[in-house]
Length: 607
Image (cartoon, rainbow, N blue to C red; front, side, top):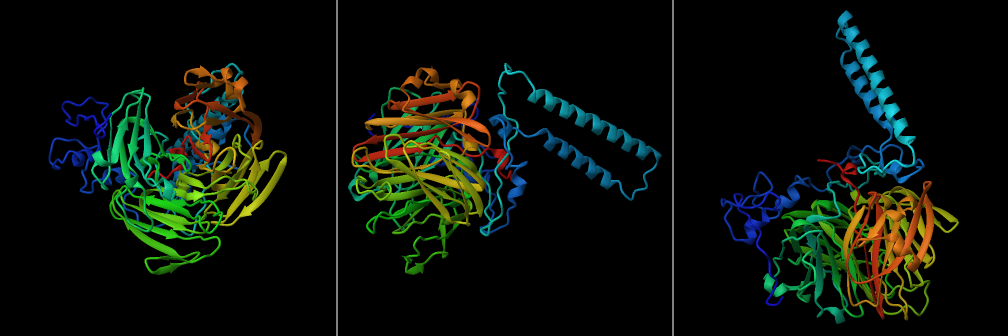
């Protein structure tokens, strides 16, 4: 499709539009309409701030540094116990229900103290205790029947509750406000800096859905006809949009370079900065999954000519952002004439669709971001060389880019697959909390104490799987090592096992010689996987890697398959959750991303 992007109109008139048409306050702006028109917003109120309708459901205007009690957000149970199955891991225990009922009864009893309980009150008390005993007996009986059911019972379709990772308090007073989902209707995209040779290369946004959909892209940087060009595809469920290189971020400048993506149906969004020798891709989190607090992960610079970077994009006006730097080594950085060192705080205010990118010649892993309203955060490097155990045949540098999940969406249990056809993988584990980490590679088990904002770096071979179990939530990022023969590095934010989904819809980018997927699923559910309508059993003979590992007595399969470019729809027929990693290799290049997933709402404060 030439002549610029064609945005199909979404009928915004309440009298004519179908009930399933998605409408937001953005449409008033994009059509140049006054607030008093007949266009209908999702929110009851119609704020003046163009994008405040996006954030108002998540924020409520809490100031940076205000107190937040993480413990209110989730009914956790004992996270350190062993579980027999993933169902036990996800589903609440019956004793938790009993405790809640008992606590409620005790509360009622205490409210009657000092009121002179008479004969009738005592009768009501006896009656209440009897009813309570019956309720407890029924709950225990149901739990016993459920756990002892025969093996032919159909798997449960809905996970009603979930054991969440422990989230302690921290000196930054992080505010947990993210919502749910790996798919969505509103997204915020930005493209971080790439190598100088790639700065004239266009970028690509893929938007995918299970059904036909309408969409729009909004940027304040320039007119949409100059920025976006839709490429004709073979499916109406896939939109491929090339984005001009003008949208790449510059360093230490407030710019209006964020791209707002809005769709009429639930979609997945994947972006790739695809240059022949320095590429990387990332899945994009929907705006309802963004939050206020992040911890940064970057690679360790290979030499003094290479640097690390991270970028922040805001969907709302007046977003106050506090950044606490962690530099390794502690090399000072001058920003706007002010020198910042390890532990220094930098304050920034961004308005709607504004971005800010920071670079340094050191590892910035552990840097903390705390904002007054939800933001999107991307991290990596403009071009980085990552050798395997300091070997000389490490290929060339390549862009590293990944959107990071917020702190309130991090997990504490991870299974990290190997990178097929590479010498090995460098793994980085970081957390804003002090935590005890146990990780296993093969039969070797190692335990480490991680200090707040410190990180642990592990290098493992192409035939290994790493199993991580941490007391508190951690961010885990992997960096594929480069090779003279098989391509250059890329970065992936790994999903924890409670961040998995039971279905994914992603695009496998083209122009890569080899493309692969890694799947992590509980062993008993492996044969319930379906790839593009074909059962997994038909792919197993051509597998590139297969291993089983155990985490808290649950047995998982780690599987690597080679796949073709194009849309990939993968699901489990028994609704079992599983992890998905997508990556591709070619000479002097590579890219990779995870099927994005975040912790469910039960683990998030519901303010």
